[in-house]
Image 1 (cartoon, one colour):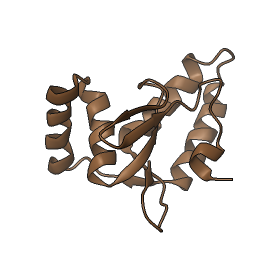
Image 2: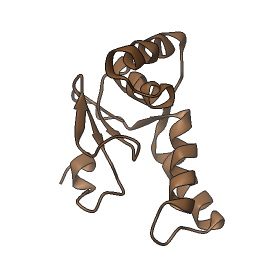
Image 3: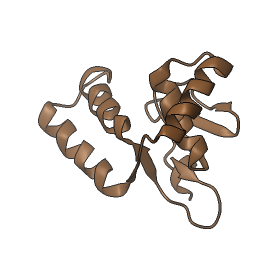
Image 4: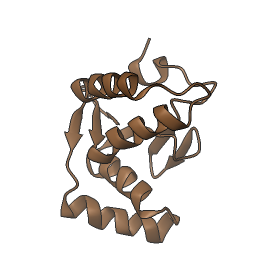
Length: 121
């Protein structure tokens, strides 16, 4: 997730690491080996802070299920971003470049995804 304002921090919900590992070992045209995926997941963990799934985030997730029809797991990702004022979320579970309530979702596995969309130039 990318937050607004001067302090650009990178964060993730706990489930994002599991989702990343699952995706790169099963859904890529040439999946990573489990050893490669573990190494890449560890890099991701070092580069980001964990946003906890608090009661506030869970309540916001339930609201998102009702308001937007999201599955609960996806709603938790959206709610964590919303509660922590993130503007961008990397996830392959949402439509690429979809925006919900000022949170934009980018699929890092999409053919037209560019790292500069998240990291800047």
